Length: 342
Image (tube, rainbow, N blue to C red):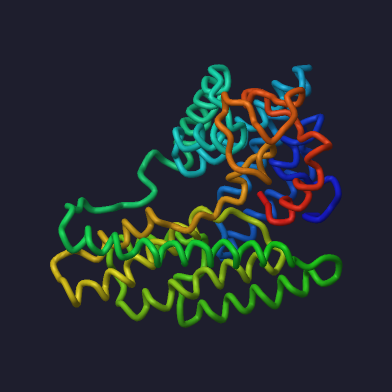
């Protein structure tokens, strides 16, 4: 199902002339993602609601007979609304729509993104509650924390690059055909075996992240989990499963902060371990392969209201109108798309 030709990602649909996602196959693929996370896959839960929200919004816009530009906007708003609802982050969902999917600051886009994300979040409150995702104590900035943060920067950068390369390689080499169920069985069993001595590996990463913020584990266990959590996520992706990477990346950053902060407290005590984990979570790996949009995947970001010098004058477009890429950029975009997934 996931490799069926009718299954489209959000970014693929945004680039298409008719920005639509087949609703039946998208619904089935979203259900598979939810089942994978329910079975303990080390993947985020935001992928399914983001994808289903985009498909539903695009379908409703097409049924209403709206033009393609409006359908594209509603598709992106649906994806952002799904992200906002599942994590109770209306502002985050709106920013995801505007900065990553549409890359636009047009007034109509801002209004649509904010309204859809806010409404979706409020609608989900009766089921998901309005409580914070993580319970974090209040911490005060200290000299040990400040100096440690400076020293953590290079290590966090290396960890970020390693996490991104590992997950990208795993997604690039997913099995197909009869190999897919075999790989899923073997690799999920491997993750389960790893979880016997390290139970926090199972799930999207909310559990180990909360344990890190509470400073509730010992230093050896934090050090082991910061290595094994990205490995478990890569194994799940390599098996052919799909899902988000937001929470696994946050957990990896928090575990890194707790592990290195625990070592630092032996040299300079006085700061709670949870404070280091919180800073590490803030410096989580940059996991978003969709950070560059369908207009600028293969080139540096261009100011949304400034002409792009890399394109002919006749082909320059304002970022408030996210049209499909031109044929002149097809080769560069095909090369970049090999590194991009949703």
